[in-house]
Length: 306
View (cartoon, rainbow, N blue to C red):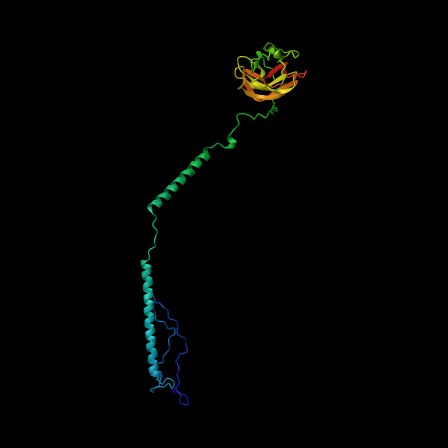
């Protein structure tokens, strides 16, 4: 067969049988890699060529030399590929053989704590279950007594006790100076229950009481202290200053002042809170005027209310 054109140019041809080769498996039954025919160049045998060498005008090499080069490269590639496949397969088998699942070891303390928590949870659930089982159900409980639906009457506010006059045991007069102007013999008339009678001092020239001078009455309420809420004084004098004190004839100058008012026909001393005492003092620090225009203290009646 002539492998040159009519003009003498060498021609390269590949020999083909016309039937595509069957694919060869990569691994055979022996698990060994098989030869792959992919990307394999079908180099024509020497018998298909003529005895004379064909020269490539471009490369200047003969076909025989080119064929040998390609065959050597193919053999080298085949060997390298086979070695790589064998190495990869061997490594994969070794890795599969050496693989052992790793289990994380739980510390003993953590494991014991987990066990305790689990046991405690079981105990709590069991206790709750027992309570739920033995606890009486609402439907099984019967009322022993019926409800009393009787309406409650409205609360009644008790009225305060009516003011009650307290008994006066005795009344005595007192004077800041022993001048006799207090008329001690008339002191009892200030609490005899007769408004037409009264106790009175002597007439003075001035309303000012200086130099320790002063006049008043000591009201004795008995041996035991009583609760005093107010004191009412009736008088025929007006003006001046009359104080109500908690004390007696011995300490009236230092006694506690409970109230102070000018005189009029009726003067009431309302105490801020009841006072427990058995003696009171009416003490004049400024003289009032009488109906005749004189500076005279006149008290016709005294009431102590408890």
